[in-house]
Amino acid sequence: MEHARLTRVKQLTQVQLGERLSVSYQAVSKWERGETLPDTSLLVDLATVLDRSTRIRPNSVEDGYYCTLTHVTKEGHQP
Image (cartoon, rainbow, N blue to C red; front, side):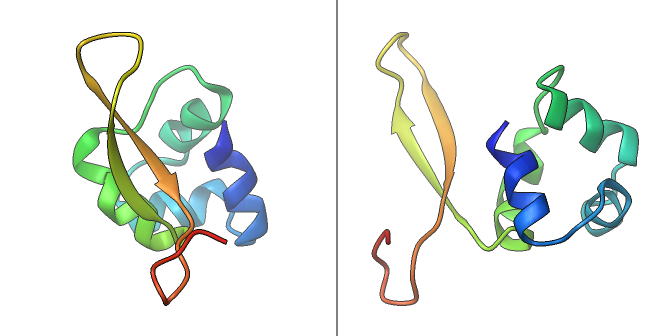
């Protein structure tokens, strides 16, 4: 999962990320292994901790939406 790579870049352990989001390190581990996904209520905080912004986009496969964490520069552009 992209999130696992981002935590390594930010040099955060599963415990540290879990503490910042008020979830267990086991939950973070499951996200990184792709077993579960973070609750949608955590996405804005997760994006903030990982220095990303949230973007909601129409899902091209289903009639729904999905959220991506995207790096955006201070000027508002993707690098």
